Length: 195
Image (spheres, rainbow, N blue to C red):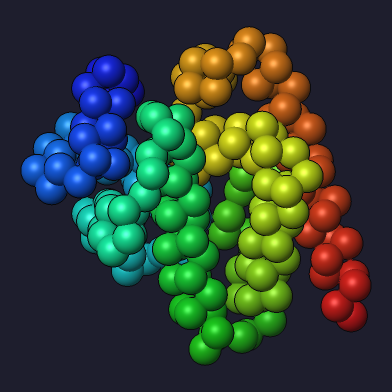
C-alpha cells in the first residue's frame, strides 16, 4: 500500500472540491489498483477472458470519482469502495457474458479461496445468489464484509487487512474463516429458496 497520509490528504482535498486532487490520487493509487484488478481477475479465472486489467482500473476509478462527490472518510473507506466497485463491475460483466451462454455446465470459475469454491459458471442465478449473500453479509456483519472485501477483492493479506481495519490479525483470521462458511451457507439457502 502507498503512503496512507498522502492518500488521506488527497481524499480530503477531493471532499473539499479540489479537482486536481482527483488526478493526483489516480497517479498515487494507479499501480496499486492495477495489482488489485489483476488479483480480482485471477480469482474470476475463465469468467473474464476479454476483460482488461487497465480497463477495470479506469472504470473502477471513474465509478468512484465521477459524478456526485463522495464524502471519503479516509483510506479504509476509499479501499472498501474500490473493492465494492470492482466487485460490481466484474459481477455485471460475468452476468452479462453468461446470460447468453447457458449450456448447463457446473465448472467453477470463481473461488473465494482454495477452501471455498462458489460455483457460478454458466449459472447467472449463482452469480445473483453470490451478490445477494455479499449484500446480506454487509448488513449482518460489516466488519466481516470488510474482511472479505479486503482479503478477496483487494487481495490483501491478513496483516494488511488488520492494519487497514485497525484490528488484530487473529481477529481478521477468525472473521475470514467465519465469512467463507457463512457465504457458502447463504448462497445455498438463497438458491434453495428460489427453486
